[in-house]
Image 1: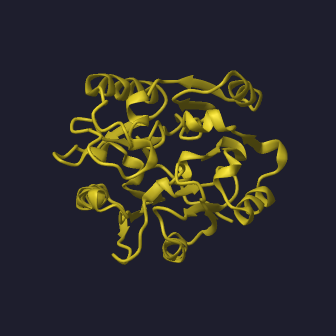
Image 2 (image 1 turned 120 degrees about the vertical axis):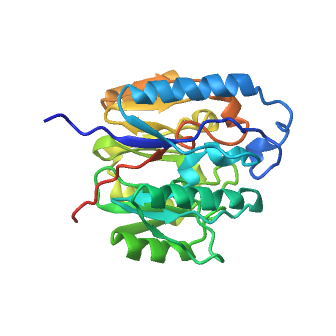
Amino acid sequence: MGVTRDKILMCPPEYFTVDYVINPWMAGHESSLDIKLAKTQWQNLRGAIEEVADVAIVEPQPDLPDMVFTANAGAVYGKKAVASHFMPHERRPEEPHFKKWFRDNGFELLDLDDKIGFEGAGDCLLDRRGPWLWAGYGFRTEIQAHQAIQEFFDIDLVSIRLTDSRFYHIDTCFCPLTDGFLMYHPPAFDFDSRMAIESRIPPHKRIVVDTADAGNFACNAVNVGDIVFLNEASEPLKARLMLAGFKVREIGLSEFLKAGGSAKCLTLKLTEPVRSA
């Protein structure tokens, strides 16, 4: 019997633009997007992922340029999903389309209170060894969402606070990897959060990402097995990942960086088997 492949949700960039500013990366890029290049880059990422995982598609919708960032559709655990409720009003019209996709594909869906901000797998990531969720707050997800997520998924949850507006979701600066490794940019988090991370991830499993690599969205990576797909990484970071047993695949995603996203933002892992403690 063959190994079950991971399944990853993506949305084609048919209507992708940078028409408004909802994070620091977008400023100044409102008219500089090369949509033809963006479509090529997205296809390159999809093609690379399809070598090792199955890709499901949610249809893009007119006037919703950021639907391409499916990481923010919601958070998935087993056959349960918590739908996002976006802080920026510009993205709220995406919500019914993602909710419909989850329901149509057999997920039990939790609708959070509309007064609580939560932005899906951008701020909710499973550790790849320990039986817990890492959940971010500080900019686009509110800590009030964490208890409801913990109870719905019935899993331990570790809250970590972001303090740098350039890293507005944890998936921009924090990437749990196979076998309990963690690639992350410590300055993006407050002291207590860094202590929480260090108390759970032993030193030999921590892959610290410096300012330059973090600015190139190296942490915003897609990890499938021993492969790490990312926009760009320095030679020292690639060496550290390879030393930990990973193969690094660099896929240029410059046009999506202009909107504050990269490989991980463009994907949502749908296969997250329920763990026992």
